[in-house]
Image (cartoon, rainbow, N blue to C red; front, side):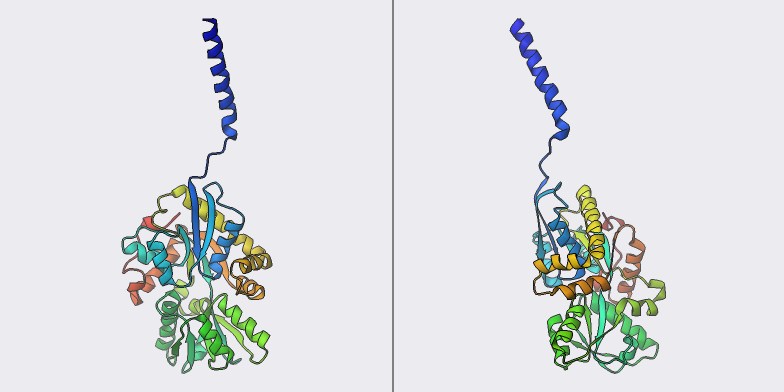
Amino acid sequence: MFKSILLSRAYASVALLFFMLAPFAHAAPPYAKLTLAGPGAVVSYPLLHMVETNALKDYAQQVQFRLWQSPDQLRVLLAKKEIDFSAVPSNLPALMFNRGDPVKLLNISVWGILWLVSRDPDVKGFEDLGGQELLVPFQRDLPAVLLDTLLQAHKEKGGKPVRLRRTRDAQDAIALMLTGQGKHALLVEPTASLLLWRAEQQGTIALHRVQSLEDAWRDAFPNRAELPQAGIMANSHMAKDTELNHAVERAYAASAAWCKSNTQACAQLVHRYIPHLPVPAIETAIRVTRLDSRPASEVRPQLEALYGLLGEQYPQAIGGRLPDAGFYGP
Protein backbone atom coordinates (compact mmCIF):
# COMPACT_ATOMS: atom_id res chain seq x y z
CA MET A 1 0.00 0.00 0.00
CA PHE A 2 2.76 2.39 1.08
CA LYS A 3 4.76 1.45 -2.06
CA SER A 4 1.73 2.14 -4.23
CA ILE A 5 1.33 5.60 -2.72
CA LEU A 6 5.01 6.38 -3.38
CA LEU A 7 4.69 5.29 -7.00
CA SER A 8 1.56 7.39 -7.48
CA ARG A 9 3.33 10.42 -6.10
CA ALA A 10 6.32 9.76 -8.36
CA TYR A 11 4.11 9.55 -11.44
CA ALA A 12 2.35 12.74 -10.38
CA SER A 13 5.69 14.53 -10.01
CA VAL A 14 6.82 13.42 -13.46
CA ALA A 15 3.52 14.51 -14.98
CA LEU A 16 3.79 17.91 -13.29
CA LEU A 17 7.35 18.35 -14.54
CA PHE A 18 6.31 17.45 -18.10
CA PHE A 19 3.44 19.94 -17.92
CA MET A 20 5.80 22.69 -16.73
CA LEU A 21 8.36 22.00 -19.44
CA ALA A 22 5.88 21.50 -22.30
CA PRO A 23 5.77 25.19 -23.34
CA PHE A 24 9.54 25.09 -23.81
CA ALA A 25 9.57 21.97 -25.97
CA HIS A 26 9.97 22.51 -29.70
CA ALA A 27 8.16 20.23 -32.09
CA ALA A 28 10.02 19.21 -35.21
CA PRO A 29 9.12 21.26 -38.31
CA PRO A 30 6.36 19.56 -40.32
CA TYR A 31 8.42 19.43 -43.55
CA ALA A 32 11.83 17.87 -43.97
CA LYS A 33 12.61 20.15 -46.92
CA LEU A 34 11.01 23.02 -48.83
CA THR A 35 12.22 24.11 -52.25
CA LEU A 36 11.79 27.72 -53.31
CA ALA A 37 12.45 28.54 -56.94
CA GLY A 38 12.67 31.44 -59.32
CA PRO A 39 14.44 33.02 -62.30
CA GLY A 40 17.49 35.26 -62.03
CA ALA A 41 15.20 38.30 -61.90
CA VAL A 42 14.49 40.70 -59.03
CA VAL A 43 11.32 38.83 -58.04
CA SER A 44 13.54 35.99 -56.77
CA TYR A 45 15.86 38.05 -54.60
CA PRO A 46 13.62 38.04 -51.49
CA LEU A 47 13.48 34.23 -51.76
CA LEU A 48 17.27 34.11 -51.51
CA HIS A 49 17.13 36.29 -48.41
CA MET A 50 14.52 33.95 -46.92
CA VAL A 51 16.89 31.02 -47.43
CA GLU A 52 19.85 32.92 -45.98
CA THR A 53 17.94 34.02 -42.87
CA ASN A 54 16.20 30.67 -42.35
CA ALA A 55 12.89 32.51 -42.37
CA LEU A 56 10.85 29.30 -42.57
CA LYS A 57 12.68 27.38 -39.84
CA ASP A 58 9.41 26.69 -38.00
CA TYR A 59 8.04 24.88 -41.05
CA ALA A 60 10.97 23.02 -42.60
CA GLN A 61 14.21 21.44 -41.47
CA GLN A 62 15.83 22.54 -44.71
CA VAL A 63 14.92 25.28 -47.19
CA GLN A 64 16.73 25.53 -50.52
CA PHE A 65 16.54 27.69 -53.65
CA ARG A 66 16.45 26.37 -57.20
CA LEU A 67 17.09 28.60 -60.21
CA TRP A 68 14.99 28.01 -63.32
CA GLN A 69 15.91 29.31 -66.77
CA SER A 70 12.61 29.43 -68.67
CA PRO A 71 8.85 29.19 -68.13
CA ASP A 72 8.90 25.85 -69.95
CA GLN A 73 11.43 24.47 -67.47
CA LEU A 74 9.36 25.84 -64.60
CA ARG A 75 6.25 24.04 -65.83
CA VAL A 76 8.14 20.73 -65.85
CA LEU A 77 9.47 21.30 -62.32
CA LEU A 78 6.00 22.17 -61.06
CA ALA A 79 4.44 19.15 -62.73
CA LYS A 80 7.03 16.85 -61.13
CA LYS A 81 6.43 18.50 -57.73
CA GLU A 82 10.16 19.22 -57.52
CA ILE A 83 9.49 22.74 -56.25
CA ASP A 84 7.03 23.87 -53.60
CA PHE A 85 6.91 27.64 -54.06
CA SER A 86 8.13 29.69 -57.00
CA ALA A 87 8.47 33.21 -58.29
CA VAL A 88 6.39 33.37 -61.47
CA PRO A 89 4.95 35.75 -64.06
CA SER A 90 1.43 36.52 -62.91
CA ASN A 91 -0.33 34.85 -65.83
CA LEU A 92 1.28 31.42 -65.41
CA PRO A 93 -0.48 30.33 -62.19
CA ALA A 94 -3.79 31.58 -63.64
CA LEU A 95 -3.21 29.44 -66.72
CA MET A 96 -2.38 26.39 -64.60
CA PHE A 97 -5.36 26.93 -62.30
CA ASN A 98 -7.77 27.25 -65.22
CA ARG A 99 -6.37 24.02 -66.68
CA GLY A 100 -7.32 22.14 -63.54
CA ASP A 101 -4.12 22.35 -61.50
CA PRO A 102 -5.18 23.82 -58.12
CA VAL A 103 -2.19 26.11 -57.55
CA LYS A 104 -2.51 29.29 -55.51
CA LEU A 105 -1.10 32.75 -56.15
CA LEU A 106 0.18 34.08 -52.82
CA ASN A 107 1.25 37.60 -53.68
CA ILE A 108 2.27 40.13 -56.28
CA SER A 109 5.59 41.78 -55.62
CA VAL A 110 6.86 43.12 -58.95
CA TRP A 111 4.97 45.94 -60.66
CA GLY A 112 7.69 47.19 -62.99
CA ILE A 113 10.58 45.22 -64.43
CA LEU A 114 10.74 45.80 -68.21
CA TRP A 115 12.97 48.53 -69.67
CA LEU A 116 13.58 49.93 -73.14
CA VAL A 117 17.30 50.46 -73.77
CA SER A 118 18.47 52.37 -76.85
CA ARG A 119 21.57 53.60 -78.65
CA ASP A 120 19.62 56.62 -79.89
CA PRO A 121 19.55 59.56 -77.43
CA ASP A 122 16.60 61.05 -79.32
CA VAL A 123 14.36 58.09 -78.45
CA LYS A 124 12.38 59.10 -75.36
CA GLY A 125 9.81 56.31 -75.27
CA PHE A 126 8.09 53.46 -77.06
CA GLU A 127 6.13 55.90 -79.23
CA ASP A 128 9.40 56.93 -80.90
CA LEU A 129 10.10 53.41 -82.16
CA GLY A 130 7.64 53.51 -85.08
CA GLY A 131 9.17 52.07 -88.25
CA GLN A 132 12.25 50.78 -86.39
CA GLU A 133 13.48 47.40 -85.18
CA LEU A 134 13.22 46.36 -81.55
CA LEU A 135 15.11 43.39 -80.12
CA VAL A 136 12.82 41.25 -77.96
CA PRO A 137 14.01 38.08 -76.15
CA PHE A 138 10.46 36.91 -75.47
CA GLN A 139 8.27 34.49 -77.36
CA ARG A 140 5.09 33.37 -75.59
CA ASP A 141 5.45 34.65 -72.04
CA LEU A 142 3.90 37.64 -70.29
CA PRO A 143 6.38 40.35 -71.40
CA ALA A 144 5.71 39.46 -75.04
CA VAL A 145 1.96 39.72 -74.50
CA LEU A 146 2.27 43.08 -72.73
CA LEU A 147 4.55 44.49 -75.44
CA ASP A 148 2.28 43.34 -78.25
CA THR A 149 -0.71 44.91 -76.50
CA LEU A 150 1.11 48.20 -75.94
CA LEU A 151 2.37 48.44 -79.53
CA GLN A 152 -1.09 47.64 -80.87
CA ALA A 153 -2.50 50.52 -78.83
CA HIS A 154 0.10 52.88 -80.33
CA LYS A 155 -0.72 51.60 -83.82
CA GLU A 156 -4.43 52.22 -83.29
CA LYS A 157 -3.57 55.83 -82.42
CA GLY A 158 -1.82 56.28 -85.77
CA GLY A 159 1.69 55.24 -84.85
CA LYS A 160 3.89 53.36 -87.29
CA PRO A 161 4.35 49.62 -86.71
CA VAL A 162 7.46 48.47 -84.85
CA ARG A 163 9.44 45.60 -86.33
CA LEU A 164 10.09 43.00 -83.66
CA ARG A 165 13.24 40.92 -83.91
CA ARG A 166 12.90 37.89 -81.65
CA THR A 167 16.24 36.85 -80.21
CA ARG A 168 17.06 33.44 -78.74
CA ASP A 169 17.37 34.85 -75.26
CA ALA A 170 18.41 37.95 -73.32
CA GLN A 171 22.12 37.20 -73.71
CA ASP A 172 21.69 37.18 -77.49
CA ALA A 173 19.96 40.58 -77.33
CA ILE A 174 22.76 41.94 -75.14
CA ALA A 175 25.42 40.70 -77.58
CA LEU A 176 23.64 42.30 -80.55
CA MET A 177 23.37 45.61 -78.72
CA LEU A 178 27.02 45.61 -77.60
CA THR A 179 28.28 44.84 -81.11
CA GLY A 180 26.13 47.54 -82.68
CA GLN A 181 23.91 45.07 -84.54
CA GLY A 182 20.90 46.16 -82.52
CA LYS A 183 19.68 49.68 -81.87
CA HIS A 184 16.86 49.16 -79.37
CA ALA A 185 16.04 46.33 -76.95
CA LEU A 186 13.36 45.53 -74.39
CA LEU A 187 14.82 43.65 -71.43
CA VAL A 188 13.73 42.35 -68.05
CA GLU A 189 15.73 43.43 -65.05
CA PRO A 190 18.47 42.67 -64.21
CA THR A 191 19.44 42.10 -67.86
CA ALA A 192 18.77 45.75 -68.76
CA SER A 193 21.13 46.86 -65.98
CA LEU A 194 23.63 44.17 -67.02
CA LEU A 195 23.63 45.48 -70.60
CA LEU A 196 24.19 49.08 -69.45
CA TRP A 197 26.97 47.98 -67.07
CA ARG A 198 28.74 45.99 -69.80
CA ALA A 199 28.46 48.90 -72.22
CA GLU A 200 30.02 51.20 -69.62
CA GLN A 201 32.83 48.71 -68.97
CA GLN A 202 33.41 48.24 -72.69
CA GLY A 203 33.48 51.97 -73.30
CA THR A 204 32.92 51.72 -77.06
CA ILE A 205 29.16 52.27 -77.27
CA ALA A 206 26.79 54.64 -75.49
CA LEU A 207 23.48 53.16 -74.37
CA HIS A 208 20.55 54.81 -72.62
CA ARG A 209 17.86 53.58 -70.25
CA VAL A 210 14.86 55.11 -72.01
CA GLN A 211 11.50 54.17 -70.50
CA SER A 212 9.94 51.37 -68.52
CA LEU A 213 7.15 49.48 -70.21
CA GLU A 214 5.07 50.17 -67.10
CA ASP A 215 5.32 53.96 -67.59
CA ALA A 216 4.34 53.56 -71.22
CA TRP A 217 1.49 51.26 -70.21
CA ARG A 218 0.18 53.82 -67.71
CA ASP A 219 -0.03 56.39 -70.50
CA ALA A 220 -1.71 53.97 -72.93
CA PHE A 221 -4.15 52.39 -70.46
CA PRO A 222 -4.88 54.93 -67.68
CA ASN A 223 -7.82 52.85 -66.44
CA ARG A 224 -5.54 49.82 -66.03
CA ALA A 225 -2.48 51.68 -64.83
CA GLU A 226 -1.00 49.04 -62.53
CA LEU A 227 0.75 46.00 -63.94
CA PRO A 228 0.91 43.11 -61.45
CA GLN A 229 3.65 41.30 -63.34
CA ALA A 230 5.16 38.74 -60.99
CA GLY A 231 4.77 37.17 -57.58
CA ILE A 232 4.99 33.93 -55.63
CA MET A 233 2.80 30.88 -56.18
CA ALA A 234 2.24 27.74 -54.12
CA ASN A 235 2.38 24.53 -56.11
CA SER A 236 -0.77 22.41 -56.04
CA HIS A 237 0.51 20.02 -53.36
CA MET A 238 1.13 23.02 -51.03
CA ALA A 239 -1.91 25.11 -51.86
CA LYS A 240 -4.06 23.74 -49.02
CA ASP A 241 -1.50 24.39 -46.28
CA THR A 242 -2.95 27.78 -45.39
CA GLU A 243 -0.72 28.34 -42.37
CA LEU A 244 2.44 27.73 -44.38
CA ASN A 245 1.17 29.87 -47.25
CA HIS A 246 0.60 32.77 -44.86
CA ALA A 247 4.09 32.24 -43.42
CA VAL A 248 5.67 32.29 -46.88
CA GLU A 249 3.76 35.44 -47.85
CA ARG A 250 4.76 37.27 -44.65
CA ALA A 251 8.39 36.16 -44.83
CA TYR A 252 8.64 37.18 -48.48
CA ALA A 253 7.16 40.63 -47.76
CA ALA A 254 9.70 41.18 -44.99
CA SER A 255 12.58 40.06 -47.20
CA ALA A 256 11.38 42.24 -50.09
CA ALA A 257 11.33 45.27 -47.79
CA TRP A 258 14.85 44.40 -46.63
CA CYS A 259 16.10 44.15 -50.22
CA LYS A 260 14.71 47.59 -51.11
CA SER A 261 16.20 49.15 -47.98
CA ASN A 262 19.57 47.40 -48.31
CA THR A 263 20.23 47.31 -52.04
CA GLN A 264 24.00 46.76 -51.83
CA ALA A 265 23.78 43.99 -49.22
CA CYS A 266 20.97 42.34 -51.20
CA ALA A 267 23.03 42.59 -54.39
CA GLN A 268 25.99 40.92 -52.69
CA LEU A 269 23.73 38.13 -51.43
CA VAL A 270 22.29 37.55 -54.90
CA HIS A 271 25.79 37.50 -56.41
CA ARG A 272 26.71 34.58 -54.17
CA TYR A 273 23.84 32.55 -55.61
CA ILE A 274 24.07 33.87 -59.19
CA PRO A 275 27.77 34.71 -59.62
CA HIS A 276 27.59 35.62 -63.31
CA LEU A 277 25.60 38.75 -62.36
CA PRO A 278 27.92 41.59 -61.21
CA VAL A 279 27.01 43.33 -57.97
CA PRO A 280 26.66 46.86 -59.52
CA ALA A 281 24.15 45.61 -62.12
CA ILE A 282 22.13 43.74 -59.48
CA GLU A 283 22.06 46.79 -57.22
CA THR A 284 20.85 49.02 -60.06
CA ALA A 285 18.18 46.48 -60.98
CA ILE A 286 16.84 46.48 -57.42
CA ARG A 287 16.75 50.28 -57.31
CA VAL A 288 14.83 50.70 -60.57
CA THR A 289 12.35 47.85 -59.99
CA ARG A 290 9.10 48.50 -58.17
CA LEU A 291 9.33 45.74 -55.58
CA ASP A 292 6.19 45.98 -53.43
CA SER A 293 4.89 42.71 -51.99
CA ARG A 294 1.12 42.57 -51.44
CA PRO A 295 -1.16 39.54 -50.85
CA ALA A 296 -2.86 38.31 -54.02
CA SER A 297 -6.26 38.50 -52.35
CA GLU A 298 -5.65 42.20 -51.69
CA VAL A 299 -4.74 43.01 -55.29
CA ARG A 300 -7.34 40.82 -56.94
CA PRO A 301 -8.96 43.82 -58.73
CA GLN A 302 -5.63 44.74 -60.38
CA LEU A 303 -5.02 41.11 -61.32
CA GLU A 304 -8.48 40.72 -62.80
CA ALA A 305 -8.02 43.92 -64.80
CA LEU A 306 -4.82 42.48 -66.30
CA TYR A 307 -6.35 39.04 -66.80
CA GLY A 308 -9.35 40.64 -68.45
CA LEU A 309 -7.13 42.46 -70.91
CA LEU A 310 -5.15 39.32 -71.64
CA GLY A 311 -8.40 37.42 -72.06
CA GLU A 312 -9.51 39.86 -74.75
CA GLN A 313 -6.23 39.81 -76.68
CA TYR A 314 -4.55 36.49 -75.81
CA PRO A 315 -6.99 34.21 -73.95
CA GLN A 316 -4.54 31.32 -74.14
CA ALA A 317 -2.22 33.22 -71.79
CA ILE A 318 -4.60 32.74 -68.83
CA GLY A 319 -6.57 29.65 -69.86
CA GLY A 320 -9.54 31.50 -71.34
CA ARG A 321 -11.23 32.89 -68.21
CA LEU A 322 -10.73 34.63 -64.87
CA PRO A 323 -9.62 32.33 -62.04
CA ASP A 324 -12.09 31.55 -59.25
CA ALA A 325 -11.86 33.15 -55.81
CA GLY A 326 -9.96 30.17 -54.38
CA PHE A 327 -7.01 31.03 -56.61
CA TYR A 328 -6.14 34.22 -54.74
CA GLY A 329 -4.10 33.57 -51.62
CA PRO A 330 -2.68 33.14 -49.24
